[in-house]
Length: 304
Image (cartoon, rainbow, N blue to C red):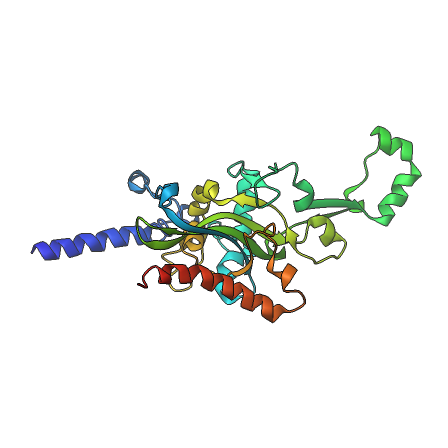
């Protein structure tokens, strides 16, 4: 009897967790009620990202910082890229770039930097040209020249039809770069990974308007500071849509494929392509060598 009660309790708990994925979906009387939790659900819902455990410096027996490229053309990385067109999906489904951009605009994400060493902090105003670019078309320039004094004084305003506005979209993202720290915790005798920063790769709005497709680092975000934002956003789970995966869970559990392009080294943290030039195959092999070097440390700890 006790076993039966225990089973029923576990079933109710699992069912309640699953129902939170799309709250009130089966009980909603109008589409507007879908996604709105009841008062009881909101009271019992204390869902937060799993906190990182405290790691003392003396417990880190070995550590190595690595940088990786995440190519969104790979199928396993699709949850980070899609959806790119939000007109045909629900409000709860957004790409990782949209989540980051909306968080920056809303002021929820403030730890934004121009480099991966967190030297230069950036604000939304500093990055306006990255996301949006406005340019006057040739016919607009001709219109401006007809009455330069009037336009400069503000008496006349150039019509919007003469302005070409280019905005960076989620579909422009070519990939992501991440910075993380591999370390061996001697207290738990386990090799672990801690994600430190993430950076979207895309063409700036200015370059996009000029037809340039070269992807660059847009900005770096300190990852531990955005875990709450990423935990609220859900990535698509193609195996079970009732249990979506949070972006925080997806990234922390490394449910993606990344290729190491740099490790911290004595040469000023030079990238692999700097010493493996013009040979993509050798660069991939070197990336695997760096990865194996880190993993082998854990294996060697158990060889006596």
